[in-house]
Length: 314
Image (tube, rainbow, N blue to C red; front, side, top):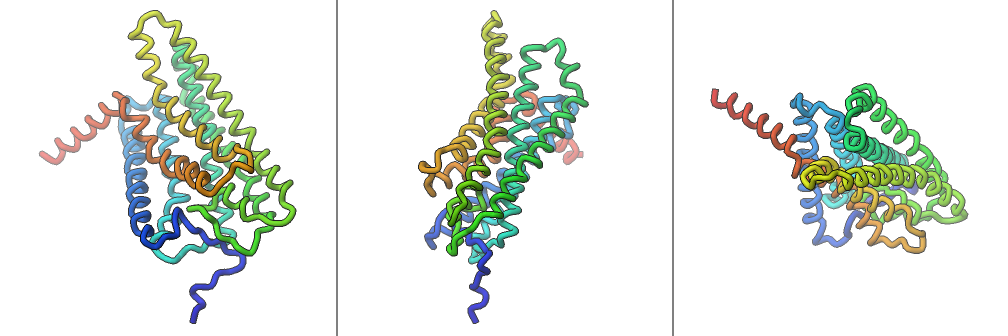
């Protein structure tokens, strides 16, 4: 019987990064390596921050939140993408697709707001250092974190709801590795123009608003740094926010290019490239960006490794 190969009319078929048979195993292996590196990297950052009292500061509190978000976001998309290339399980039910879309957008929205909170933390640290401990208290950090998660939860709701009301054509083959918003929009048929416009209009304010607030914080930070007289002081001040600025630029540039381009400029290749970068590569790269030149994290890691070595010797 061929019943196993049949799909429901409400199922989506995820085609993945490539449909060439000879590339399925190499793509699966590459995705598996990326997934493991991301899990290990972000878990190490979380563990070091939790176990090191010297890292219990607002900056590392938000970094821990970011690492947790990266763990969650890549776990929403990559496991299914790996199964697509490992075997013939390419179908995804309508409900599962909408759920994947919601959780991914929820985590992306939360990360967008959290990056703004981190920029504000750096702004206070550099532009108003005498009041830093008062403004960025534990209570304030907890509030900013809670607001970030709450905005993410609420902001992501309209997109799946509106998408679920769209009429999809008979061919539900997603030329993508997960149920991304832009890929789903390309499968719509009939009079769905208003819903498509509403979907993107609802997403634009958060993305543009977060970007403007973050860039404003950094404009003030750079202005303050340039007014520091000594070159050593300028380098030290800039080093405290350079990693976050790099992460911000990577995140916002790919998100804005992915979702705020004119519909006429959309293509499958570009969609896959942008989506792969912000959904897969950024969660993998963030631990390296934040810790590669970070002396505090390196010292904490050395201490943790030293303690483990001493315990093993005993």
